[in-house]
Length: 109
Length: 115
Image (cartoon, rainbow over all chains, first blue to last red; front, side, top):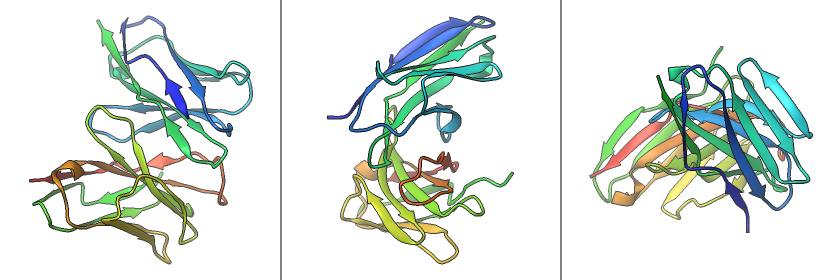
């Protein structure tokens, strides 16, 4: 079966750095996406990785290792507005997005 | 920049009624996806359309149907509504050929409440 694992919840302090991990087992791989979702709102696209390595975009970076079936989202200089759920999604061989359950990130002052 | 538009934003229906949700993709996007998301759950893929043809089907109940029109907007028709259909319904759009890895951009969602 297809499976995506990410922690259910994480807590971090404003101004700090947090890393949200995602491991996956899917039938084929056509890229990995990270989305941010505030409660009751739509998922917002953050990053897309299809090759191994680190993609940096401002305060957010995403890393992929295809051989390990592993990705992480790194958030730096955390702000209160970063409190949200972070969804890892993998596009499988049928070009369908397989979603993780999301990691709820709580930022404390 | 223009985003995905969904209407209505909120909808309250009673059991066994019907509902129609509308989605207007980002201009020039030719692929539309429908998702259902319950409280605390990840988005569940329902169905997608590329160039007005159904391209993929997920966990869409037989009571639901959808189509994409010539102007690329899409409608999700839901009949015989059940209490369990209460959820956020998201539409997403992307630009690309069928089988594309292009990023899906989400609309604001329609919150459906079935009483």
